[in-house]
Amino acid sequence: MGMSSKKRSTRTSGKAFLVCGDEHLIQEYTELLAYSDADVFVWHERKPDLPNLKNILYNRALTRVPKKLIAVFELTNISFEKKLERLSKIENHCAKESLIISSTVCHTATGLAARLITPQRLVGIAALPTLLQNELVELTRSPLTHNDAIKTTGEIFFDLKKEVSLVDDRVGMVIPRIVCCLVNEATFALQEEVASMEDIDTAMKYGVNYPNGPVEWGEKIGFDQVLAVMDALQHDTGEERYRPSPLLRKLAAGLAIGERIWS
Image (tube, rainbow, N blue to C red):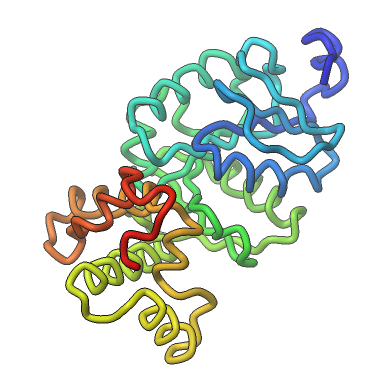
């Protein structure tokens, strides 16, 4: 941890990953990538809760990260402004052969590629908290993404014991869209006093065999993440079915911190 940037660059020789973005996603992807034989650099303005492993290296400044990397995992969903700022800094800092694997649950890979200088190395990923518990990882591409970028991304996840599926380049992708819609619908039911949180979660877990109840799932994912996906879906489609519930907005704003407002 206390190594100089010069020593870090010599040590990695390009066999390294960079992870940045929303904190919960940083934690999950850093923990996954730590199982590789590469160094994992974490770039964030404040240090997230990270595993205490030698190959995980936290940096507040991107200038202390090697330029040559296997891939950058850019995992921002909440703020589009921060996402664009991070992508711009990544492009300016990293070598052109370094892959950029970016979360595209709230913005399409095509839309992001249009803002990049090197769009051919951008691969979209369905990054949402808790989804790495699954064996499958969804990837997508823009029309400018090189086939080699998709192939290399698939190989990275294969080495990490994950399967990949290439899906259409649409906001929400597949699993995040379905899960976030379930959470949103559950908050509508809570708001309208259709049932209690416990009854809703129990019905979905035992009635349709979901691993989590939808409200419980929303807590684990983060209601701010769910809201970001629902806002993006409604903006993309203009359809009423994707309208976030007022209760979801309250939960995402943190008005329920310290208590369950549905109790």
